[in-house]
Image (cartoon, rainbow, N blue to C red; front, side, top):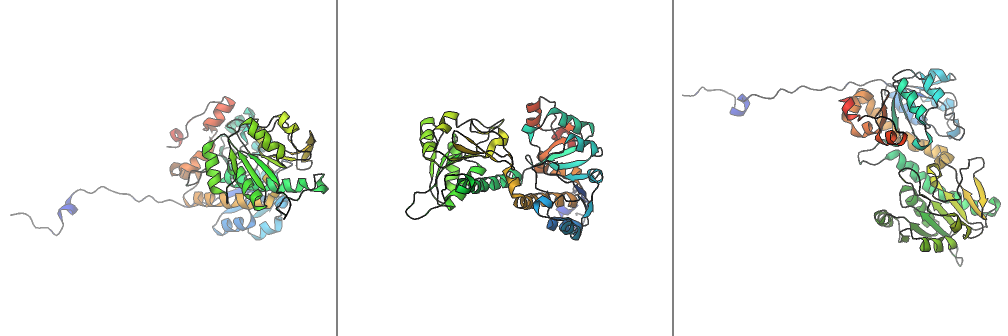
Length: 398
């Protein structure tokens, strides 16, 4: 006769012990310095985002006038709960720093050892000394360009690409007006008048938004790219069919001879390939407009030269060239709103889950955004570009 028991057979079997893993909230102390780069007008957080952080129990220290170029005053930040200071050194002593531009060597020297900071990297404009300085301070750095979202896309690059694409058409429209020494054409579809002809080199995010904006203005759009996949994708996403082609010199030359606007939006892995040579530019219409959006990557038009927001254009072969890097900074408030919308959820997630170190353990997307971890280079692309030793972050944080 068996032993009677109130428990079932499954309940009597040994059970695996489970421990509750509690994630402790951490308080963030974030410093936002004023950008010292002459042409940088954006800031990482809006006053609305600051208020959200402060209400959640975090501290925000902002250098005076950090948001002025984006039309946010110290008073707005102060009313949102931020602490305002004129002491740059004090801001750079915060344990977490937010910047749009990467810090200079002088700014890195102001940081405390083992600081965390998030900014753009702008790899192609950096040098080895920058990474050496981060190593000496054992800095952990995250780059906008490397952070992914849940869909494995790059949210910072995508949103800034959207702004740059839309802006390129607005800029071209402005440059065609007579008051800007253009040919005096209205960028639109007026009854009885031929539509503006736009050629776009590239089929990525910038190109897609440039095309959509140009179509909205009533322009005829032609898109060139060497990737059939990208051409098919952009065709599917645009509101109606446009001309698309792989880059074949004869076809491209004919399109350029007829176009009023050329948008350069093709980036390469290392630098943008030269797609439009000087001979092609010479054959374009007088006072046609070139907006080389990828000039910060070398440009895809042979005649392009870097210009500034103060002096954005030059004329070569009777063609107007606009070659300002960082176009989104021209629309500083829109860009600030976009950056703030993306970075705020990431930082709140960091706070809710015990700080950056804890989040790096389980969030692959944030982990991929790290290019320096406690002074160790952990980004393969940067390592190969500058011939620097690098390690796999997955072998370090676990």
